[in-house]
Image (cartoon, rainbow, N blue to C red; front, side, top):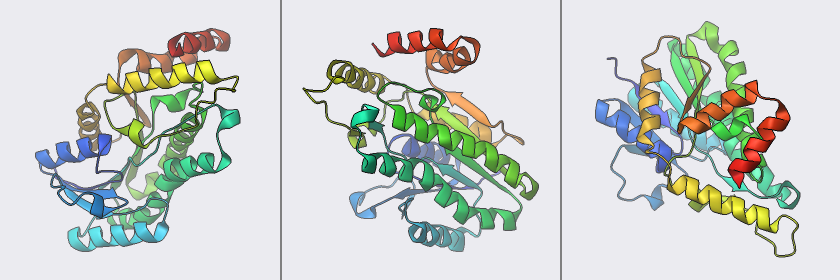
Length: 268
């Protein structure tokens, strides 16, 4: 097995940390990123770099530091992201833009910085962490679904643009895993005078229960490692509970009205 130098955005917690710890244990050289190193004075699982995916200068400094030390960058895992929930009508525009800035613009910013290095190497692998939610318009999670769906489509375009440079690009869409994503999620407040109050509150409770009861994020890490060993990865991979993965197939097979009914029943 060839050992790689790996950069994971959002590597200080959740799925990113699970991926980093797993790859480090195997022997890969792993760097994770966080917006504030001072928040992790005792982090020892792997090396952390300070980086804000919304700031190109911050990305350039972190990547340059890594390449100067290691001489190369073999794998980029775009994992940094934020959650957002709320009725579309009641979600503030600035929160919508903020979610896209991290979940879509952020990965694109990092990709733009690492591509010259990977082209110079004539090799590299970019893995974008999307979401099964990006395959469907979930009620009260429409903005999150849109950001992840956009990143999945970007992945398809990037694969075609970089194939002549020895660079492989793929997307992993996780379902629900037990992480701390809910703690950093923006959710529009539940308003007592809102026509969405009852349905939205039920959805928030369901989301929190699904995350708390989610699987071990090491499952995502194992898939990442598997992809790293594949000569020609597929465009898309899905990982998570069977029913969530199967829901993507059902969307392609069922009439829209049937699928919407399933989503509504699942949300309730």
